Amino acid sequence: MVRSRTLVTTGLFVVFCIGLVGVAAVGGASDDPATNPALTPPDSDTELNVSEDAYVEAAPGPDDEYYEASDGNWVSYVNPRDEYREPYLGEGSAKICVTLLNEAGDPIVGETVPNTTVTLPTGESTSWHSHADPMTVTYPLTDNYERPLDADQFGTTDDLPQGSGYMDSHCIELHGLPEDGTVEYGEIQIEGEHADKIETVGYIQQAHDTWDTDTDPIEAAEPYADAGGGWTYYPGGSHGQVVAVLQLDSEVTGADGEPVSDDENSSDDDGEHTEPETTGETNDDDTDTDDEVPGFGVVTAILALALAALVSSRRWAR
Image 1 (spheres, rainbow, N blue to C red):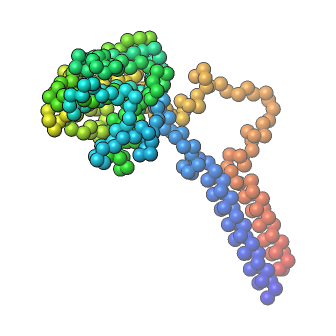
Image 2: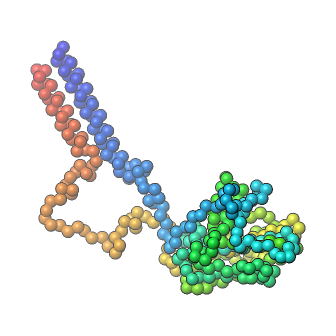
Image 3: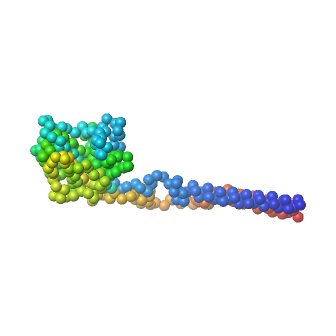
């Protein structure tokens, strides 16, 4: 009777030890990000090869002084470059914008192209506006304007009638134009120290209706001749917008906008891999298999104790 109890107790102890072995092995493996994605650092595989990171600026909310909404059908934002014609000739209004994108297609403020100016001719009908005829944009926007980006022209979100909720364009706005008037604009001119790094993708013109933000600026941009170069108002269609889309030229900047692999991030500064020098001494870290297989140092000790207990119990039982 005593012998059978001893064997049962020993067996339970062995099972317990085996359970600990499993926990130790699983616990050690789960510490490795390669086997447990939850431990992988965020965005470790989504870093992009761009010469300038995206400029992230949340759009003003309803309680912000720069927020402006109309009838819940569209969202606009108060702009320091928003002016009204004097004398006021009608309900015609226009928004003329420039958006600069990095190699990955994200909005930026031009920190990598300082002392570069973009000029967009707008014509005599807009000469009353202090920032028009022509419209000029000087980079970086953060150094030259109170509000670098002031419009949310692209993207969508369930929380807003229009836009993604993040600013992406630099604009001027014109109000008080005649309802049968015409707004014209010319082709973009780029001048300055880094003009060769910027290419004109095209123009997106939408007139006589609300602005459709559910478009990709690069895919939607058209050549100047196809975009229209302007529009003429009519009663009931007294609104119009155009966005000139610019992008950093990857052939000049050397960045392609693609994800950067971990291998590229971990490469040596000089691009060369050097093997560690051998001194003839034994490095404990190099021979310690417990470091290579996490948890199994403890596993070995537990198994040894279990086997010793089993042998001892068998001898006692005899």
